[in-house]
Amino acid sequence: MPTLGVFDSGFGGLTVLRALLPQLPGTKFIYVGDTARLPYGAKSQATIARYAVESARFLEAQGSEHLVIACNTATALALDDIRASVSIPVTGVIEPVVAMSRHAFPAADTLILATSATVDSHVYRDHCLRAGLHPTEKACPLLVPLVEEGWIDHPVTREVLRIYLAEALEQCSPRLVILGCTHYPLIAPLVKETLQSLGCDAAVVDSAEVTAEAVAAQVRKESGPRSETKDATFSCFATDSVEKFRRLGSHFLGQPIPKVELLDLGG
Amino acid sequence: MPTLGVFDSGFGGLTVLRALLPQLPGTKFIYVGDTARLPYGAKSQATIARYAVESARFLEAQGSEHLVIACNTATALALDDIRASVSIPVTGVIEPVVAMSRHAFPAADTLILATSATVDSHVYRDHCLRAGLHPTEKACPLLVPLVEEGWIDHPVTREVLRIYLAEALEQCSPRLVILGCTHYPLIAPLVKETLQSLGCDAAVVDSAEVTAEAVAAQVRKESGPRSETKDATFSCFATDSVEKFRRLGSHFLGQPIPKVELLDLGG
Image (cartoon, rainbow over all chains, first blue to last red; front, side, top):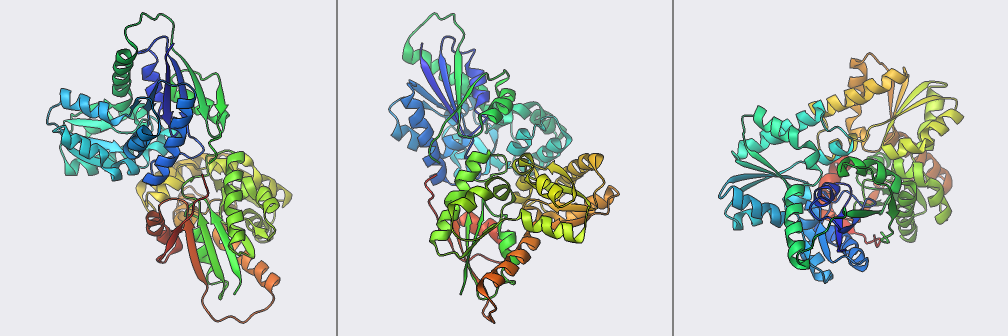
């Protein structure tokens, strides 16, 4: 039974785990949410890299054969540091999304919605440019707190989205909108709806779903063909309150989280 | 020249420092913002106490003769741990506010607005009850992100406040509203206005201003009468990007921050 490590600063990466579970039956997933130090979205590159590397090393030590960085901010700011610090293959959320976008929407005007740290890194922009896409980046710092408040289908979230998207649409007319944060799948319908209300009919791409497909394909290639009938299993570690992780996390995972272990990374 | 340490998880405590500067001329202030691990507002007691104690010890080692915990969450969840870990007097933001409230508004129905962690600790409630006030607590998790987004006088912030305050006013009819988070002074006029639009004429008490007065009185008592004519000075440490601290922090401090030093607490 292959073991896969999945890492995020908090709960958002559970949307990636949710998409991975049905893709890789028989796999044992280990998830780390670095909730004691979340959110990463407004922190600096040096701090994010230091935090992410600690979690990556823990997941490797737990026997992971492949590591998924299920966090756009950590992927944007720390993927190279993580790859240099472990000896297993590492997949982030940005490369698969940009690869899929280039394939399905060649040369498209592309709007990337993400945290401030992800946008400031311009990693999405640079990947898109290399893939022949025409990127515009828009930082949306209030969306993570709104999702974590549970205001998923809420007038305030609609209004905040309307403000962010209207500002972005002054700069570009996208054919493609990338949800560049693993919290955003929970408000994907609202993003689509708000875009339409602003006269924009762009496709909305969810980094969780696309990453899960890419990781599954990669892992099948690494471990060879298998006929596995057992369901995938998962165990979760959090660096802050396990109770809160269980409660909030289940919304992101779409199923109950029976047990969460407390992880002390020394921070 | 006496030295005072001021600690917060991030920028909010700068509203306390701002109120302290004119109160204690000739004082050297050292401020620590634990920005690498902010916000504390949604974290657990054990994590917050561990973080706060590290900063408190640093400030004592830097020569502070008195320590101000300029953060409601850290005061609510870690004041006892901090007092046990340093040998200098420590003032938090909660006791002064409740003491002033009892004095100015005896037995008043009191609404406390704060972060989730502060509310969940019920430290404000317990202090108010002991002071003969009648407390109702309301968690307002979106206000810190809105203030940090700079949406100080913004329709969305108004609407979020209207929702939180309308929910709170279903539970109580306060004569007094305590801003139980050092970020909230920046939206104090909006709180007052929103309360009035909901038919509530309560007084709004700002924990930054009240704490500064209490600390100044205490320090004058500790260090005896002095006639000091020089301005107070301050130096700032942050555990994450010093550039961001300088930029965002100046809004909270109400003046430019010429220099910020990076502090590594090992987290």
